[in-house]
Image 1 (cartoon, rainbow, N blue to C red):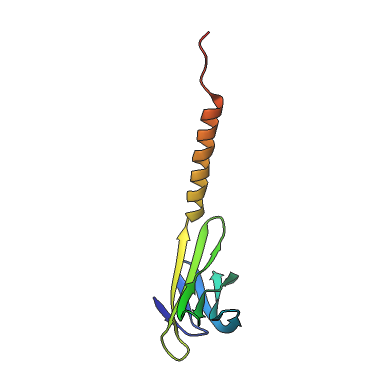
Image 2: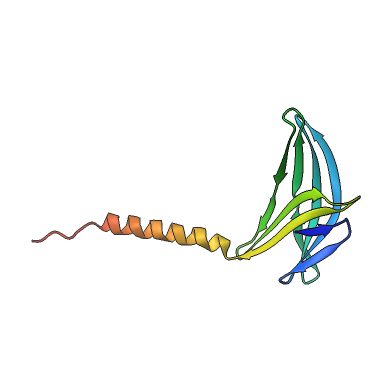
Length: 125
């Protein structure tokens, strides 16, 4: 867990996560604190992650909504945790490689099973 305040950044692998700001929102049955976390690859901005903490007043319940961004090779995850200071929040940040390939491997196995079943058995003459 990392404690960050707006403007601070951390680098994992070659990617930099910068906590830019916090947006407060009131929606139907909950209020939320949504963090805007910019994602950089070697100084080039490649996107944003927006993890959120939601407070449901009716049930007095809190939920963390993770944010996930992905491309063909990497997945980036951000989860915003508890407030640890005046403008500081705990974050969990992850960079995972090859996660999408797991799904691709599963699809390839299904395709192989369907192809082998479709060909059927050869009949003896």
